[in-house]
Image 1 (cartoon, rainbow, N blue to C red):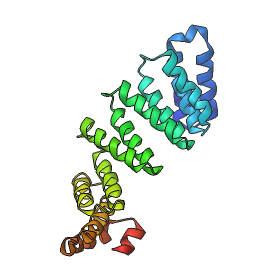
Image 2 (cartoon, rainbow, N blue to C red):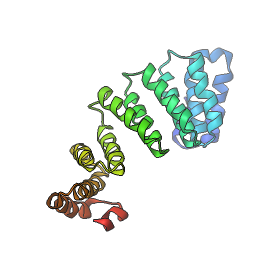
Image 3 (cartoon, rainbow, N blue to C red):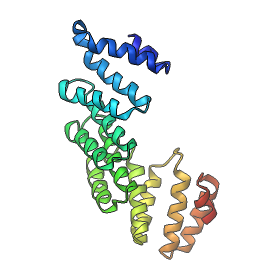
Image 4 (cartoon, rainbow, N blue to C red):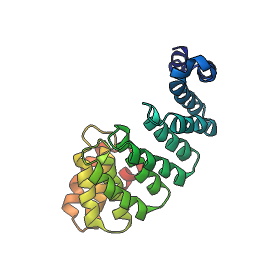
Amino acid sequence: YLGRAYFNLNKLDRAKYEFEYIVERPDAAAFSGEAAYWLGETYFALTNYPKALEYYQRIISEYPASDYAAYAYYSKGWCYRNMGEAERAVSAFRDMVSKFPRDPLAAKAGYLICDTLFQNGKTREAKEEIGAFLINFPLSPETGKIYYMKGEIDYDAEDYVSAVQDFKKALDCAAGSDWRGRTECKLALAYLKAGKAAAALSYFDSCTKESGDDKLTATA
């Protein structure tokens, strides 16, 4: 309908008007859940996260069995993350994974649990969640980034032998990715710290060609 068309054209104020019109119409009840979700997405795109949360919560409360419920939990987590409320973000992502473990978004939410904890300095909790992720989503496209994150944690803890294994596993998943060069650089550094100079040199040579990370390339 019109709201989606305006949303796709990035005419967000007009999209908001169209979605609000449907949400408030008693004779459009069959579409109000979908419209409420897209109204939340519109407010999200406008960076009005508190207002977006109102509509995501409406989906969760009033339409828990709808096709949009999993998306509402996921987007709710993103709202809190963007607002700097890490604990609430993690809670929303956990709810999503718990209630919709087979949804394609579940692995992404699982990754975001780990990443949100890691980015906020909660490395012990992040490592626990990484372990759970690798059990629950071993074949996920996010798996390589999870191993990279685990490598960062082990490297910072000066467990360089474990970090080498983590970065090698990440590299196995990095074909064609924009983070392959960065992974090679970190693997080279981990090898160097682990006393494996020859292995480090081979990866340093490769990472200087592929990494887009100026700091890591300079270190190499």
